[in-house]
Image 1: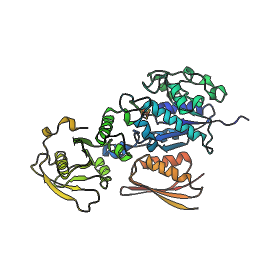
Image 2: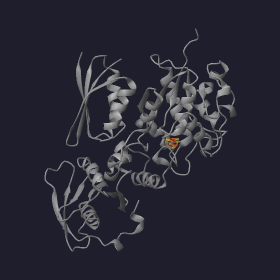
Image 3: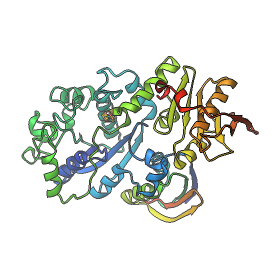
Image 4: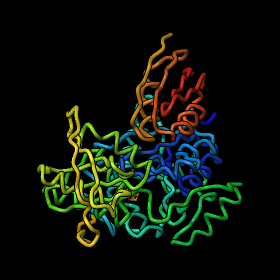
Length: 350
Length: 75
Ligand code: SF4
């Protein structure tokens, strides 16, 4: 009897990896999914934070895809290791701070390491990549770079565009039938949609820009600002989570204020009051503000004026707020005049 | 057979799922684990993760903003 071959599939939660996995499952291969959590993933967080989104049903698309396909999914925390990819991408960044090519190399390499673990012992790796679909990582000339630099070499199979690429080990060994793989290329999504239909997939997610926040211009701008203010490229998970929410204003290079925009963000920012000076409006309804950096007492009072500007007391002469420093039992109460919008220059908005 | 507790409060998805998954990796069949979370996303994600890995959701409770899941491990 033939040995049961096993493949590990990089599942992003989008349609392409779902299709690629299904194509290989249908060839009798045992497939399990792997998904990497870098901290920048679009999945989950913002939905979990913002009150409006809370009302909608939330789900992790990668888990959902795995369940539809009937495969196991392993989610791997790569937050710390991924930093090096973001700080020093050998192949550079895309349009924003997205290091897509290095990111792909990193993820496939992690998948190889997982596949080779004794308790796993998987034979090859599959991805939903399609030649020409993404300007940086999914080009004919970068496909071999990913295979080579990740160490996957000919054990990396892209079922959706395999026919446009040289045969890989699973094809050469006859574990999978190359004739039943595809030759998709370019940005046209019609072939994927038709294939989804033929599999009876009616619901799936098709993220537009990319799979993570680093492709987002505004987000990348905030990250660049953070690095500039610190004088080095560094971040912790809390930093990059906070970049996803609230209004960020930097009145001076050494501090930044993060003002919540709605109730869900209020709750979320509250969770950080032990780590950052926190400002709350008490005389009126209003946001919660965190101050990041090295603010002086005067800076904190100024941050209180900014907070007041976004409170329901914005048109009043006086708004009372509290300022709580990390470790303080008792907050300090301050009464300030809200800063008029005309005195908030556009370039303060990060 | 043991029962252990996992505090996944103040973590946002998918971290509570990852912590649950990693903890369960070191447990034996028949053990139970109680996971406490605050992200409402776990309401979907933890049961979904359990279903695809064949673990059994014995009980789920919501108290205020806290959610807890009692899971029986099957290996
Ligand atoms: S969009 Fe983000 S997660 Fe996707 S390949 Fe690029 S850097 Fe990696």
